[in-house]
Image 1 (tube, rainbow, N blue to C red):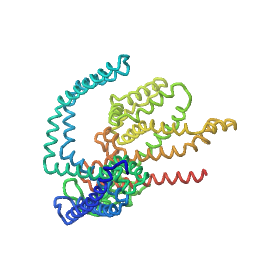
Image 2 (cartoon, rainbow, N blue to C red; image 1 turned 135 degrees about the vertical axis):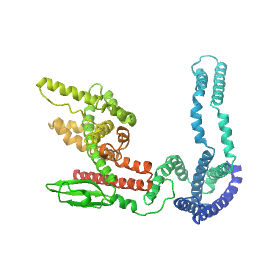
Image 3 (cartoon, rainbow, N blue to C red; image 1 turned 90 degrees about the vertical axis):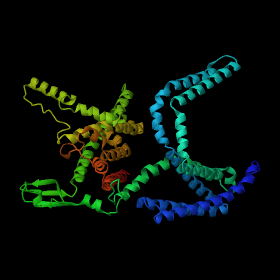
Image 4 (cartoon, rainbow, N blue to C red; image 1 turned 30 degrees about the vertical axis):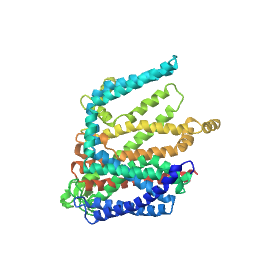
Length: 556
């Protein structure tokens, strides 16, 4: 403490101000929370009022508790105070950027950025001039002058760049926006909460509150974690909870949503099975077609079973999605397992082939889908072209009369979904191959050497060593590939026209969710579909976890 004589005088004052500030913050937060709860925000939706009141009430309670802890010089009060002030400072900064229309200004900068690129070249030239002294054998005075010249060239080029992209006008526009009441309040918030952070973050303040080294390490850890954590809470967890609320409303993205309870889920799960007296019996004879639509029928001899639903498109989408996963997962996992064993060998050029097989996994889905759309073209596509060549070759060789099928890959309901499956399997196989390859390289070589001594062949080694040792990797690959397959969207949306495909043969769960929420503006219903999809994926993942656990118990 003796090394900071000024801090010793300043610290007690900062602590008194901090206690008063935390008490004032608690009162203000509680007042705004009560105002929002009793209807002080008439234009805001109910859910926004509830959330605002809840968050502010929690903040008020924490701030009051922090004031009490700071008054008794407890470090717990400092932790809470830093957390509250940090969150408020981030919120004030976002408000400043929003009020100042910085994000719009970035778009405007993108339009004028090209004019300033030549002047950035001057900055680069100045940088190289300033770095030449490291390779120069001249006297020190010459080196210093060369470095100074390079610095002035860099500054001059950067000033010209700012002038060319019209930065001055942008800064003046930003300051003009901040001069408005909302901007002044936001700037004031940044200053106040920033000063509070500085006061509580000082080392003398921490010493006065009996902070330990472990406390400071924890604070630093949370500080480094906070950008990712805040991003997760704001852009993932927050929308996730909000969609759960919307799933119980009739939200249409325009009007105030009304609470309708489980109506959306009831419509999704409202299904009916009816017995058909003949395979051709009409659906209206056995179900009320004002409520139910036919999804499909199972014909058994001279009778059958009709499956009808209030929302047949949901069940068609679920059927297509499960079918897609049933075929796409094995087609992207089994070849990857075989290919990884080949690439794990010591043959020449294996590194090249590893990169080649991995490239589809990092390529843009849009570009891949457009290329495959061209390949699938029934008239000029290469797939049908090679099929035609093959049929002609065998017909001429063996004097056959096989007819060219001229497959309509994306316009025939029998092949449309299979065409999407091929794309997804081809694109995912390379990534799965890399995962399997990493697992193979972690298998101890002594196991294979011992098996060779015992007379085991290649096939015995694969079944007795490779597959059991790859069980954790296989579990991870199958689980992630299944989750990815259940969320298929991009390939279908780009490849098919319309995306639903012929006779709804390629409509998937995510595609139907997108159509309901962003085309038909039934966001409440789309949220319910999303949560049903989550339950389905969670159930499938849980089954895989259970099977993995049972397999581990059996092996042990």
